[in-house]
Length: 227
Image (tube, rainbow, N blue to C red; front, side):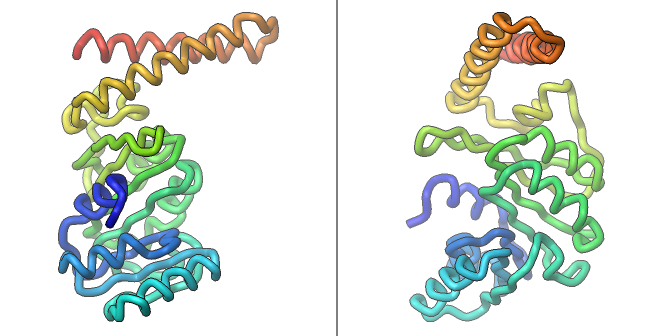
């Protein structure tokens, strides 16, 4: 059975002719997509030979067909337009943004991206904006003590309402449910903690950090006030 996070990722894919799962690890996402009939073909890729071996073991164990494994970085392992859906999940936002920016030529004119960065989510949204993608889905999952932002994007112009959208998701499409509210309050407490820490340090770097955190805190409080 898939975790709530992985199930949300699978649902966000929808239907596709060919899905690429970057950093596949055990291959649970492409396996689920084939089993569910959401895609006839999937490519499970990773830069780790041992991870691909785990995926191959899972595929063999289930007696599945339709899933190919490829060793390599990001989108380097596919031809331009080969996959109409691409999943990149469970890795840092800086690496994810790097993959998107370097692999833009591989996306083709029609693509559906499903992304779940572990951190630096604002960098991922900025990268999507840079490659000409717009967000069409924003979901929040709380699992094992962590908040996970899951997003889907397609070709188009990004519609950012306020700068805080880069951090917490687009206001027009994000799900502002209990999990989202708890996430915003979590971020508020985090910024307050940073302010206390840097207030005791008398350096230019600490003062810059204080102003950054205070600015973030003000934006988060505005979100709560509007809610």
